[in-house]
Image (tube, rainbow, N blue to C red):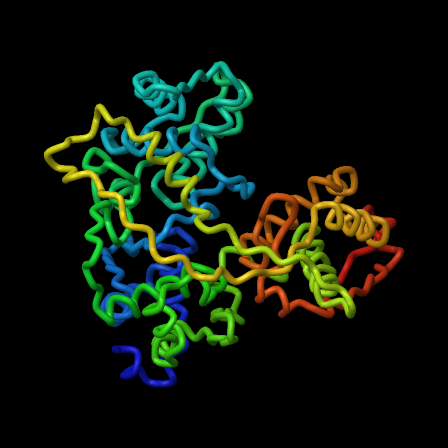
Length: 454
């Protein structure tokens, strides 16, 4: 590794660059900030070698962009694009995003929002199930979410006008954007064209040709485990096959990541998590500030107390066998079979023989009824510290808090409740204090209370 030859004085800078590109796979002159690209350009040579050695990732750095081409080993239902309000993109927003990228690739140096919408609407009309009608407010909102995603990454830059005015009234509002063509070209670079795929698995490391008995070298198994460690909050041993479990148990598997990123590997019998004390590599910090993360932390502590209660023996269930199967089936169903070039797609993937059944580890089940009762109790005790929108929606707050815990892989959803996964035990014994603010601040119009959790 090149990281071993970097002096201790420069190592912090190098590790910041590594964390930056691993958390933002595209870096431009303005995204995520103006200091990011110069930092990556400084360490481009070293990062290019280390990222390829450790993960099999390819890094391309130019004067205006840095693009990390990652390798996916699994489908991630919790991944994907999100709006500026942290709303996950739906099918319509993804369609608008893809069509907008195509339109920008054909455009000149500038384009107005209405022109872009017109081109996207024209192309959307040729895709079954997709439509952009500017007269519909919901379509305009979805379209502007896609445009804002592109603007945040520097593909386009507002030169004049206001997108909000167009959303309010497309006949009167307008916005003019400058187009950064290198960023547009760097944004969408799939490993294979969709017209060459029978299944979405063709975009994964294993491809959509499953050669049954083909063995994978030890080095590639180690890369696969390292990729899981930087892509998931926690890697549980029960999710891995025998070769991967062996690599996960070896200290050298995580040593390279620790040296590259400055993160610390926390090992337990059940698995490994990389702890990011800097808070700059994770897309979702936990614990965090705000009503939903705080309630999620409170709920984590309550669940820990529930499953470890003396004399209590909660029902134990195995985790869902294949949580990716439903997502894979849905994505495969959306591939237009008539548009696949059979000569380039290769043979359809043969059905694999199912592996020999192994006893599935079980985890404590926490029922929906208990979760609802606990959420109501927390609302009664701490509701005055919650944001106003959540004070009136306790059921929605519970759902949002469980989503946070699920994204952190601390619980797993099952019919009738959630399973308490091993990493949740890190948050047992949560202590809550409510700090009263200075009454003079309340007179100025601020909330009089806030919750602090530790």
